[in-house]
Image 1 (cartoon, rainbow, N blue to C red):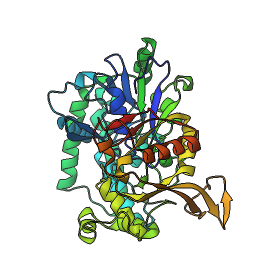
Image 2: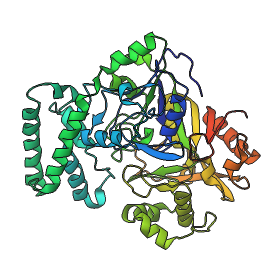
Image 3: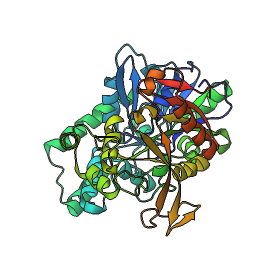
Image 4: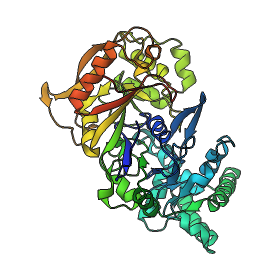
Length: 462
């Protein structure tokens, strides 16, 4: 897809629980953009992981927008939380021949994630036991909490002489909480290493361009450039409109673009939604179409990749056991958390939830990813609606974790062989499946992912 001088920001957002392949979608768009265009992140931190292939090699970006291998400008927006150590590490892993740093800027309003935030996040999650929500442990929630408590350190604070003093004061406050509430002593080598890495990252941030998010966005739009807002996580993880409390700590929806960048809402246009041909979820919380149900949720919580490979060396995608089908789907799709390394829970595409996400984001165009992962299945399913006590319901329950629903499915035959081998065309079975989704969701599916790499894409022709 090529953008042509949009007068509004174009959000690219996940329509599920994250991990939909937004990075690949943004990177593909970015490759059509020039030096006067802009890719901007507007929320979240390094709890996101966008995997992008370049020259056959996979790169995972957690903070830097997915335009490193293009020409467009990149901006880390005001709504983000920035772990300086993680940013430095991420930047150092990008090959030297890609000159991306002159194109990268950061908002002075972005919040800094401190070493104590990381520990607070991990320790508090551990203490929840069976009531944990599935946090990545990257310090995101404690950092946002300090922002709302009006005591956070922000990128702009680095320039002032009292920065170290303010850091130490807030750090002391955090250490007291860790000691008194959790019995954790920060006087150890692990913490000193985290602190050393933090200040190395601070020195790196000092070298980056500091630009107000609203200023850089409006400048690009006024010069007839394109602005793409790259979302992290997915709609169903939005702190207010996701499946609370199993959510992230920021606004992942289109409405979050305006607040995350300081924009007049009129500058935010229709969004491009991204969804997988199936569904995955990392962490706890409701998942109506999960293959294997509660057994799968517990397995993915407690087991590692090695455990699963030992138990299922060659999982059968057409097993009569839907739990094994879910394992096969996870294996075929390489559904391992890019940020956490955790097993992702897998299930069939859930149209009621996708429709909810499309409506909330005003997504008129959709990118369908990882259709090729369904190679080898004899049949694939789509949840068309829910029932409660045997009766069809037309709404999404306020709390899916408490209001139990039963998904109703429609089955589709699968194409023969590898979808990638069909090249720039798709088999009839795939086209029929796509057309069904377009009709039911009332959207235009603009392209389909038929393989893992950036060039494995089929533009719309059906």
